Length: 84
Image (cartoon, rainbow, N blue to C red; front, side, top):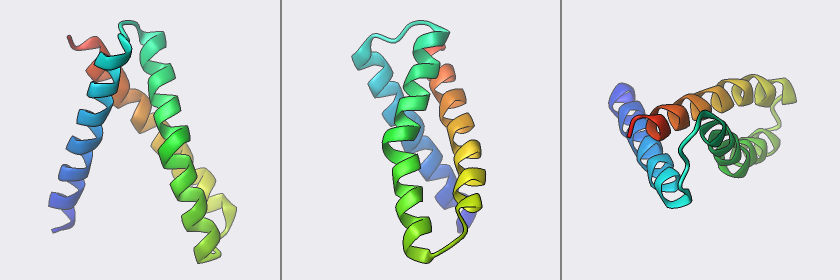
């Protein structure tokens, strides 16, 4: 069940980034990096920060997950932006 959930979440994430990429007219790798970083900052970083704070987990958890998540968002943004 976790694998299916992860697949669905990844596909939705890629679809949303693709819609944003098309809407913003992103066409270059710089555009893709900027889009991925902004999506992470606006959604991933903020939601994870709230989760870490409410769960009273160490902020090192946020940093570790944040680094992973920003890399994933930039890679996804790069793929969907440059694959047209």
